[in-house]
Image (tube, rainbow, N blue to C red; front, side):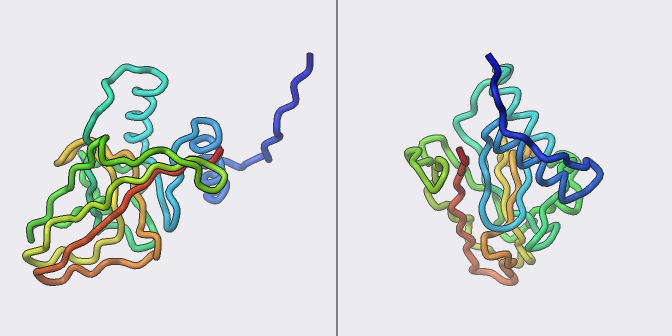
Length: 185
């Protein structure tokens, strides 16, 4: 019996646009990992290692709580590089410091039922509010999901859907994020 598979175009691994397309094919097409909608997004190497050590390898336990963080590094339309790790604290992954900033817990029970959305499946978390700022946090360019309330491993980084920074330049600002995972079929 001969099986026919969908052909994949030849991609030049040195071309940045082709790298993004290849990563998209591998992450979303082969492994079925979540696609973030809106601005730039990336699953850094440390996040992919974390995912692949859970599924399919099952070498680490499934966590019941992850943490949502904000980043002031990069820009409103760019995210940290795939090799940037939270533990090494590169400028591209800078989080706000002071002003009552803290990552927000996202428990497994915060995620809604998986449902059809377009050509795939989606689960959306309850909206999360960061503590009100008591001082300037600077320009917040996006968010990430991490394994711990400090440092840890970044699972993914994403800009906000409207590709604008949130200027938290004084006390009294509250940033709210509604994270979701969307996997195309």
